[in-house]
Image (cartoon, rainbow, N blue to C red; front, side):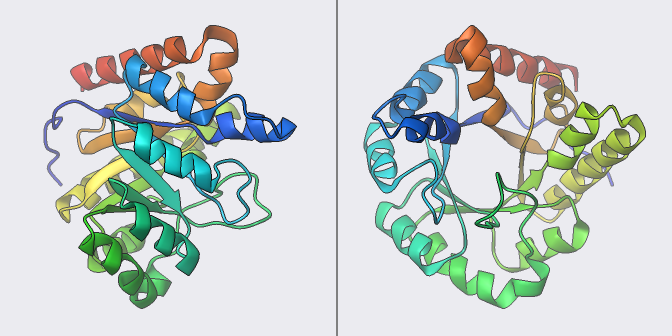
Length: 254
């Protein structure tokens, strides 16, 4: 499969969920995720990602209201495929909606959405979102059947789950890491060949972002937890500027 050359600037979406996690730990009004989103804008973020979970463990409904009013860059609204979340998305009509799996007991999103076994339900679920102008993204594993299913149900975008690759890197499991990176590379090209826009994210750090940023077909990376953690030591603007620099350098060298 022939790869295309890099398709312009690689976008960075900054996930602000865990600013809200810190806020909610004390039940206070700070730190404010909307303030973090505005700071991310000035630091070079091309978009903001926020996941409104069923249990509202971090981002809350008022946060989404305020983000829609405050942002000048696109909002990527992450949500589970539930009637409640569909109604919220249809009311706000964010730039993008990313459908993710969600389990109450998980600490964070553990894997990609199962699309192949739920094609009919998901096709009907995303149709109204597309009708109101939302770009619909499906968060999935780098797996050909899931990518094919995402294309069949009418998704505009697939976001490939990079968590396994990042975990293998952190555990110094080099063989598995490289195999997973190869799979991400191959599936990025495959998704692109089906006419899907390709994004990637989950667990990316300064140490893991460069190989993924170099994939020609990947148009956007969504990164949150690492940036919020790094901000404790260097500040949020500095953390985003450095991530942006690494992504741009990887793109130039691809």
